Structure formats: structure tokens, C-alpha cells
Figure (cartoon, rainbow, N blue to C red):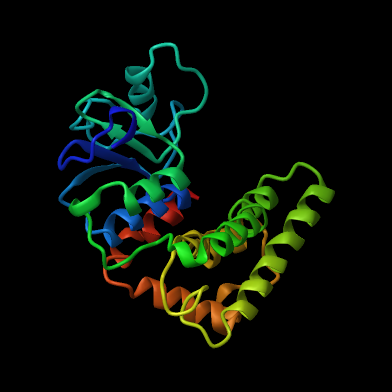
Length: 247
């Protein structure tokens, strides 16, 4: 409810791409917090067009064909890439936020009684550890696969490749005897890890040449990925066809 953005049903709209791990974080958060009837969603096509993310049909909220039109509506002077996710305020006609980490925490704790309390994704007990593991995972794994895939020198690729498998080895060890990264409770860090793991064998292993191992070769990580996938509502946020088409 800060800065004029009150927690209200049917006020907010989430723009996502099912191919995108960052956007998928927010889609999973929306599901786990029981906000499907509170926050509406638009999904862009998996393939990037010459004008960036494109809607298969004109966006029902703003009538846009391309994601960049949403950004321009919020700020006619905007420049740069039009990324997803985007949390849109239908009342004020503007972007609330386009950073997945921020949006995920807004969904977790910003909607009060409108949200389910079955999952609390950023528990105070583990906040320091969550922040530390997030900071470890992001450059090495979440972004590490992209650093490898888009490397322009052999050295950059080698460094990214090493980081990816160091992170996977670390998570494999951390999950020994646990259901989730911090024990039996699902947290935002599990969502951050899962969205990369579920794309790994289908896309990153081959296309980005992060091919030392597959997730299927890690017993704990494979079981963990399937465990998160089986959390009610999560499977519906994963579209392997979109992922394969987009990558």
C-alpha cells in the first residue's frame, strides 16, 4: 500500500513470458499466495520479434501489441529494452515495478488479507540466509547460464561455465536430507533456484553449452526440482513448449 499503490483486488495486472525464468518467479509467487483472482495476467509469445516481446492477441488491459507499448504508456520518454515481468496498476495506468525480486516480495507480503498465508516466502527466521543464498545463486547460476551462453570470449565462457557447476554442486550438497533449501518450508530462494533448474536440461544444457552435467545427473537436485514442480499450482506455470520455442 506504499506510494499510493493500495492493495486492492482487480487493480493490478502482471505481464509475463513463460520462457523467462525471472517472469516465472512472479507467476509462481502469484499462485502460491492465492492471488489468481486478485491479479490478472497477460502472457507474451515465446519468440522475440523485431520489436521485442509481442502479444498473440492485443493486450486486453492496454490494447498493446508489443510490450514496449506498455512502457511507453507509463512513460512516453522511456528508452531501452522493454522487459518482463511487469506489475501494472490499472487504476493509475502505470508500471508499479519491473524487477522480479521486488515483485515477488510484494506478492508475498504486500496484499494482506487478499493473499493466502499458506506460504510465507521470506520468513524472518531465515532472512539473512535467504539474502546470502540469493546473492550466491544469482551470478553463478541464474545469470551464470546466460553469461556462458552469451559469452564473447573463451575466458568469459570458461569462467561462467565453472560458476554454473560450482553452484549446482553446492546446491546438490545443501539439499542432502532436506525437502527444500532451508528445510521443510518453501521460500523465495527455492523459487529462484527452481526456475533455472526446470529450464536447464531442456534449454541451457545444449543451447548455452553448460553441458558438463544435466540436472538429471544430480540425484538431490532432480528430486528437488520435481518436488517443487509438484507443489500445487507450480506445474501450471511451466510450459516446456514455450521454453523450447523461445530458446
